[in-house]
Amino acid sequence: MSLLNEQAICAQLKDFNPLNIYLFSSIDSTNRFLKEQPVHTQKTTLGITDICCAETQTAGRGRLGRSWHSPFGENIYCSIRWHFNCDFSALSSVGLVVSLAIINALRIIGIDVLLHVKWPNDILWQHQKLSGILIEASSEEKSLIIGIGLNVNSKTKEHPLPDKAWCSLLDIVGKEVDRNLIIAQLVKEVSCYLNVLISKGFKAFLNEWQAVDYLLGSKISISTPVGVLHGSAQGVTEKGQLCLKDALGTVHCLSSGEASFRHDNLPF
Ligand code: BTN
Image: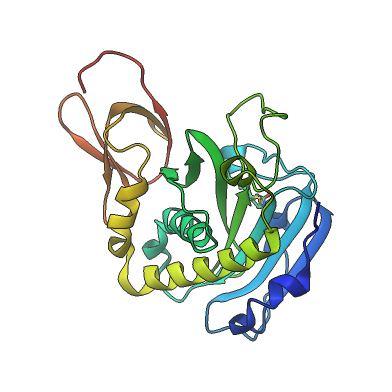
């Protein structure tokens, strides 16, 4: 097992100076830690000022109040503080964009297999979860904490999880992958993709999204804050909202929710 190494990560991130890198052997949650750090006055032009990674998390947070399985020394648990200078309402698709950035980072380091994103931001390989993203508001106005959990070297088949099918890069490529290299590439790609989001909007990513859209054309149910909707997934809007066509032909555009596949015989 090779451990996280600050110098190895920094060596690849010279453009991001000054970048504060916090590495922990063990922490409750990298997102929690970064949220509570004071903001440094000097910002990088690339928008990212702080990253926090840990070998394990004792209370890793997932979306919708779930926990994130964080075994020691195997995977990436990384939080990034990103400063933005646009209106918050322009950022509704951040999660989708970060998932595309992760897929591109993996492609650049040679992991060029077909991955899918289950809206809004679960990355899947062969229907199993490879990566999840949790975005939280930072204590500072105009910055977000972007938490990335990426399964890298876990032997997932030897340690199945009770509630979901999971997989790792080890399952995909058949050998251990250098986590320091991936963290550096993730930071670069997340920064690059978010800068495009700011300058061009999510529409610049629509084609890229379509190529990985896991739900497209499927019969799904979505739990939303106001109840469950049933229909077929029709892709996403230029703001990253999920389009769901119901039995009456009405298209609902949803900004949040949790999708599941339906196994009934209804024709919509
Ligand atoms: C999900 O539920 O799919 C999102 C999981 C996000 C997990 C990451 S691991 C690094 C960061 N710190 C946390 O506590 N959570 C995120």
